[in-house]
Amino acid sequence: LLLSLAVLLALFILTASQALLQESFGLELDLHGDLLQPGPTSGQLLALSAVVSFPSLTLATWLARRLFDRRSFRSLGFEPGGFAWRDLLVGFWLPGLLFGLIFGAEWALGWIRIEGWLWDSRPALGVLAVVGGSLAVFALVGFYEELTFRGYYLHNIRDGLGLAPAVLLSSLVFALAH
Image (cartoon, rainbow, N blue to C red; front, side, top):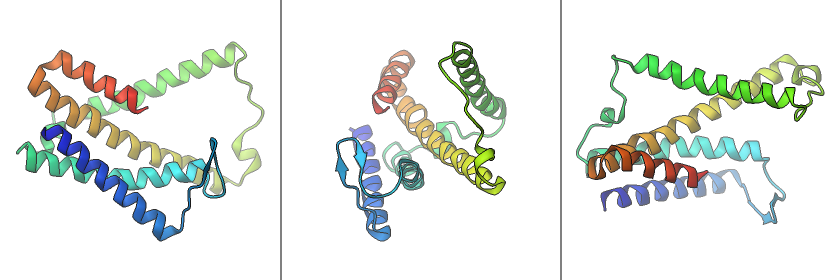
């Protein structure tokens, strides 16, 4: 019940925030098939979604943890010391290495062809803006996804059903969300 209330609270905050931002910025999402016509690009929508989702899901998780669970927010894995920095570095470098290996394999198999470089067609400041903005958006998305799925869901399901079912169920919900 508490998990359901937390999810509903997060969805309410997220929906209200997105509606407010859409109204404030005049974004009209007119869906025709799979195309957004007219309006912002998919990259702009991803950035907007991340900027709205980050504070709303973080706040909803904090509220649920404090009000419903009566536990600290830090208990979701925000305890400094121990293996925190090592885990953070592994969490960044391992996926980077895996994506690099996948890219290399696809390139070697001829599935990918490099036709040019971004800095050949844009000024350096534009390239930095694209790369920096993309990294910022993905960092925000990564934070709130980890907070939601491996933080709140995993901890609460583990408390009720044990570790193995918690890993299975939180992974399933994560997969379905994507």
